[in-house]
Length: 134
Image (cartoon, rainbow, N blue to C red):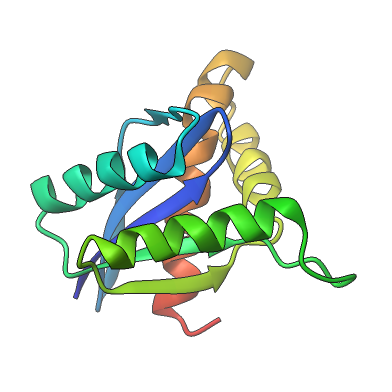
């Protein structure tokens, strides 16, 4: 199945596309967040359509102390995508950005290149978790 991964942030939205079996993915250009979840959902849906995916996987940050603001916003984004007719899966994205940053640094990328790729790399990590049932 071809899926789109989303790592939503208030400034940037990381996106990646992958086949789940066998797993293999591609980083896509980061989307600048608009300040409106409805607009962000429409822009993500446009990418999903152009990439011909069957579903969208949204990373949800889980806070062990209870639902935080970022978690609520990500869930609202997922609901907005569902309202646009997309099948949406939610995956725990805890530490995906930090893990992606560490992996990119291990590749000896310069700091600007790491910053440029980190959000989409986190989206790909979210897809990997989805594909592997984590």
